[in-house]
Amino acid sequence: MALAELGVVVLDCPDPGALAAFYAEVLGGTVEGEGEWVDLKVPGGQALAFQAAPGFEAPRWPAPDRSQQFHLDLTVKDLDAAEAGVLALGARPLDAADHSRTWRVYADPAGHPFCLCAC
Image 1 (cartoon, rainbow, N blue to C red):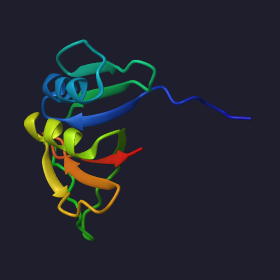
Image 2: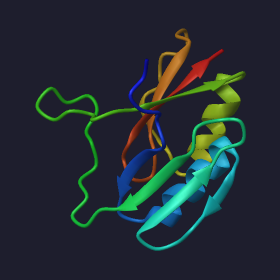
Image 3: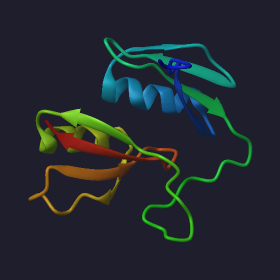
Image 4: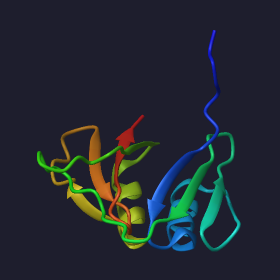
């Protein structure tokens, strides 16, 4: 028997509204709130929250001396189309050159790693 249920995944960042807007364009959903804490309600999925973090330092990937902390795996039907979309929204490639794989790694505008994974 579980002791708890997952409420929300929270990403620290310098600008919660901007990062919530990025993920709203990638995942769909509704951005709620402003300022220090912003929620993204994703249709049919787990909500994400974004919290202002003074002195935020983006994770580095890959970096054996500095952990990526965590990453999101986002399932997509068309890797090439999804890649074009996230790059247009401000993501940057971290490990996306090998198009023979079924996944590619990017950083969101605040530097958090995420993967696009073919379903």
